[in-house]
Image (tube, rainbow, N blue to C red; front, side, top):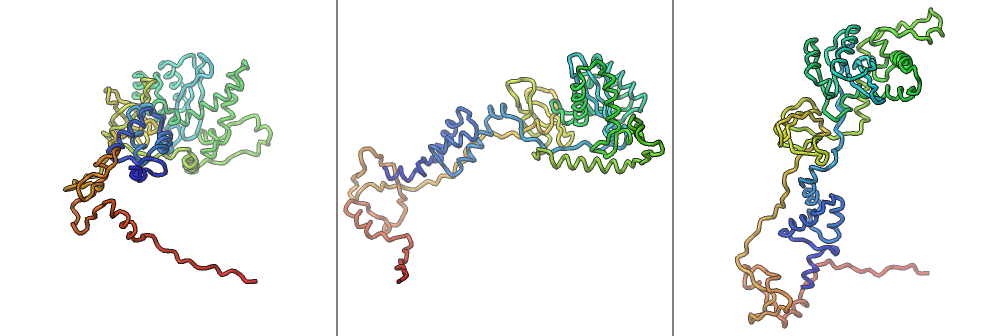
Length: 415
């Protein structure tokens, strides 16, 4: 029996048979330690060939773990399409640097022209009023990209856009980086307002900041926003430093701006810290980020529509609502895990190897006669009678199976 237990262990760990692996895995996963800690714990006690894979499968397919796990790795960066021209595509957003102190940000996606409007409130009516004032100077854009703010998804705002022939695009909720152009502008203006927050003439300083920003070369286009948007640079007090005969008459070619934006997008994609590539199909059951309950972060949903490479419309299985979700907010759903056992082969007959020729059992009192069996279907001439009298002779007549090493006497130096 001791020799039998030795053969069932590997480096001090018990080798678990197929029939007991599922029970062992359930016991191992009962406390939901996680994949790494489960592997460490398992390696201290038992082993089987596919132990690591089985532990990963059990953990990944646990319903509790799938609902409470953290967000997946970020998907590869997907840039917005480059607009057709100036003021055809704009990004808008709101921010509140101080309590009850709101600002409306508007950015032209092509020229990077920036507009900032102080607002007493961020209602739909006030937003439409500011946009009408802006559109009266530069005309109507073709597309407005924004987040899912209540004033930007209201029926009144949709009707305003529909009447003026403007297409509205909203990003997935809780994914502000999808509206990156507006978010970067918000960050820039926020940093400036923090620097001048203690000064009384904040509006004057904001106007000076916007003038300088519009007259400075942008890293994406290679030109200043004013030069691309207006076709000329803005005259500032710095122009008094040089003679009037020296003027900047460089013409901006829109094709050069287009190529510079493409080059900037490729650079951003290259250095973006995210390379998760995944694609979901329509009607596929997935795990989707759930923001209704703070306790449960993921729920099961079904992909209804594909809006882009990284944006999907998903319907949760427990309701009829439709959610817009980014790839970073969707996970693949693993089905329930079950061990696959190898097919069992039924033997025609078994015989106890511990019985002698007379049929009397030689097993010890603490061992069972069912411990070890051999196939009784072998030929009678090949059958060996394992008895006490012949056990020593069998061991002496056993042939060596290991190779014999040829020993050579070392030829030492003779002095």
